[in-house]
Image (cartoon, rainbow, N blue to C red; front, top):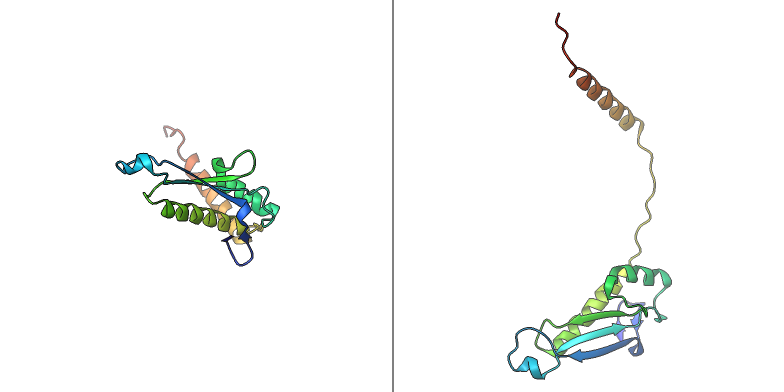
Length: 139
């Protein structure tokens, strides 16, 4: 089980991990030990997330979202498999926590009468400046 918030807890069947050999430095260890972690979360089938949260999560995940509706997170920063597992789980938790926050709806407002008048006054003044840029008569 993975705790996201007080209301959202992911079950074990929703998460799966695959281990593979990591790229980068590590000497002989890199050729023998499978330290890279690929965490897969079945987001589309999850009963713990609402459709709105799933939509926001899909947008946040980007290309990490698969065609089957799963999120795949790969972690291979450290040489330790346990630390890479923690990093992958931490990234998933942060992503879901971001998706849980609903964006505020924008409330349309009208410009005030004073701001409308200031805008029109600035426009007329600018127009006068531009009209004075014309050709000068020989008088």
